[in-house]
Image: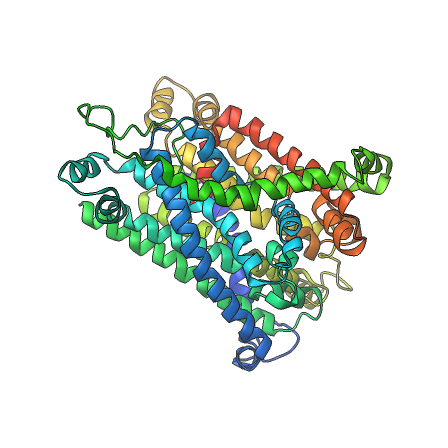
Length: 262
Length: 300
């Protein structure tokens, strides 16, 4: 390896460490016994996890986030996949404009979306309810589905669907038995990413959640702003594990696709 | 990482153009998009219309909300802070991200996969977790100050967080993957034999890189830089948690307006200006690098 190449690896390794180490350190600190965080921790203890499991508000927030994440994953995957099928397989005018519209919430500032959604939902007395968060999170989770499902549809051949139709299968039958199974790994990835988007989302949760719908990130936000209790490091570690699990689901479904194609 | 939507490919249902003129779906699946469009009309378009209405109506059509923003130095300072923080974050992300993306694009498949995973894991980790990490590391009694004190490098804890340094570190940490992923997507498609050809024709490694590789990677630079810059403009969590009173950005100012001052007119006007700023950065990046590069590589 040349000296330049070695320097490049050292530089790249340092940057990757900068990205990953802070997260690893929070996870390590969460197993420490003391109220003041030390690194390396002065001992091993489940104290902060016991605190989390024994706390009604933390558990209620966790269940709300899980339920919300599942509902958002289902709604965003259904809406987004239907839209992607229409955009990729359909022939209507302005398909590119529609695709752009459906992907645009990905780059719009979340705080602006939060303001607009507040103005929509306040007259309906929905602010502070899980319904508000369901609608808001579905909006920001759908673009990922449109991107992933759309890319998968572009890779697959529409002639299979035409064959099914010409053999007498109806519209829905073709959709259910041909189109959706061919892009199944993309649907699994879409649902996992949509779940994670909702599960980790904080700005919409603090603006639209209120005390009536406190998700896990909303409670964490309040914790970081106010008391900074070490229980937060335990909750953080749990969030990291959830992210890793979602990424593992995505990776496994992609491998499944590759091995089937091979 | 090839989730980039190809916004140019037509979906004629023919399968790559070489297929025979098969009859398209009948009925065609066009109408399946209606569900998403109805949902977007209610939850996306209508709220933005309401926002426009609030910013220009007080009561009766007026530019008062915008005039107030221009007249108030504290508001203008927030715009200045926002652009400064976003600009520095973009420059730092480029300096850190370009070599990392280059390394990924030019290494063997296995180390590339490991590097990719080590970028994607933080990318998909909650922003709150990563922000808390910096509070724990950089705080007054944080791990870095503990170490500096223990080694006798400083006399008393140095302020690393709740100021500009904290915000910049936190922003770069959150946004760096948004730079690396589009850069890598472009660099991975550069034919390595072009650099080899330049070398065999007598160019030095530096010359081959500057004259061949760097220009070809420019669309990735533009896509990554505009993506990071526009994300940074609208970012709320990091400035709100890691910043101090001098790091008020447009996003945190909107929150103050709406929650503390209950001034929805000014809040809506600020939101609209922020949206316009983000949209112009996106448009500029998309014109040069293609909209697909900006949104597709984002979620690999």
